[in-house]
Amino acid sequence: MSNKIFKKILNNVPRPWLIKISYLVRPMIAFYLKGNKFTDPIDGKSFRRFLPYGYEKQRENALSPSTLSLERHRLLWLYLKNETNFFSTTKKLKTLHIAPEQCFLKLFKKQRNLEYITADLESPIADVKADICNLPFEDNSFDLIFCNHVLEHIPNDKKAMQELFRVLKKGGFGIFQIPQDISREKTFEDNSIINQKDRAKIFGQYDHVRIYGKDYFDKLRSVGFSVQEIEYAKKIAPEKVERFCLMKGEILPVCFK
Image (cartoon, rainbow, N blue to C red; front, side):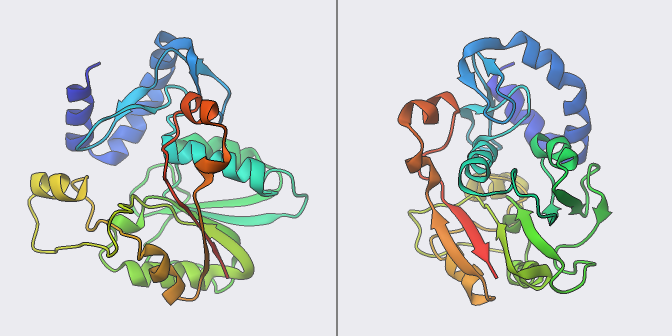
């Protein structure tokens, strides 16, 4: 399938439909692309190539055919596996996952050390229908929160950040990845841009409302989080960065309360 077709599908098929369709076509694509050039570290399966991905600019070898993980998901997986006790602790971790990704969903649900709750307004695979700006959970409820590539969709992102801080337990942590242009000092947004094609061209995706700059981390700090800016790919051997199809320069925002 060509990059143009992928781009057209992404920009014209609603995301809930894409999620449902992907469950049907994924096994066939994974079988067709079997090989040994690239490996998805989440399930250990290898392929002759990964799929392209991107709403505006297509990135080659971005989407794993087996788990449907993107570069950011594989980086997060490696960080959790190698740098935290997420998979190994015997302590029960009450975990909230906003807009749960397919590549993690079944695996996290099976983890005996997690009390795993997923939430989203539209996703057909989320447990709880919830607005991130008004979460239906008590203060200090969760040991761990994942909220990846969500805040760039939210007009009032500060309110969403405040809600994430509110429901996180003291001593807990969250990882809140976003698409980020680290060449920008300041985040850019312009509510007057309403045409979807214009938004895709300017913001990288038709349903994004901003492009985050370096000040993203300070935005998180302003609501109370202590933030570590971790460029984790630098800790991974270059040959594995290539084999796992990771994105160089991506920064993991690991946020503590």
